[in-house]
Length: 343
Image 1 (spheres, rainbow, N blue to C red):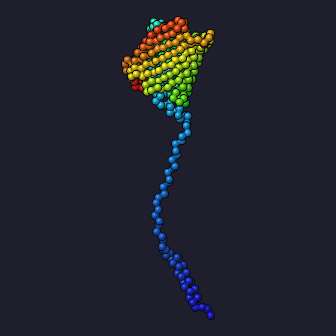
Image 2: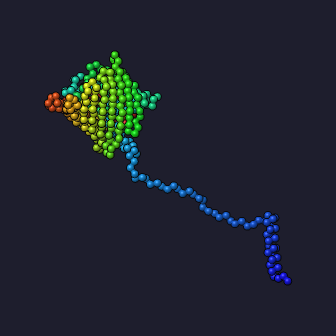
Image 3: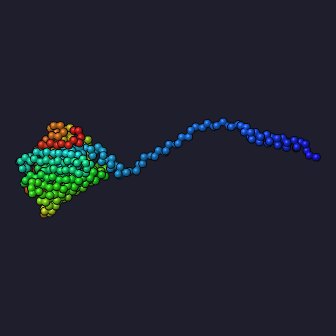
């Protein structure tokens, strides 16, 4: 006989199951739990990468060359208005010089010279038009020259040169320019020039190398090598050591010079150069031909374009058995360059 208690329990289970199935069939709502509120998820910031202490020579060189020291050197070259300023400026510049050298190595005559470096805007500065007097006398990048050097190759007849220049923008310390032109008056004499330069910092110094090759129909093939070491002594004084070697095929000889110069900015109108130089030749045997001590005084007479220069010199030439031979040079210069820094 079946157990009544077990039968009733089984019936209850069947009844509950049937009721649950019926509720689901008619779509009865079941309880839904409350949503859990959580904080929005925010992406974690990227980890901060520490600055590397590893020395990067390229970045160091860039920072150095764009720093205060280079600005001082560029300012000095532009202020003194020498050949380097004329040759290297990317914008148009014009010089007009009236000079006279008296005493040892001088001619006691006035010399008028002019140079125009005209930038052609349509070429983004890569092409220029040059007009200059006696181009064979402007192959060295020195802002000051002794009277002996100025008249080593005196022009028997003043010449005017017209040339076209192609120049690449300086990059990573390298620069390049080339010229092709003619000298006049007629008969016209063609000439070509090309220069490659390199500048790099070495600790507290800056080293600048320049190599210029040229050919003049009258003087033949030549080469000028120049090395400059520069160091800033204080905010107003720059030291520069310049070594130059000039070779001409027709002479088959090297003209050598070594100069030590201190550039001193006294005020916004006055600057000085204290310079000691030694000149020599390589053949028939290496020998010193002259030793020069000079003070170069440059004064801004008016605005930013009119300057007066006064250079007393003491020469000790080998030809005079090293006897002191004084000289004096003076120059009035008009300089037009709208990019020069305020003085």
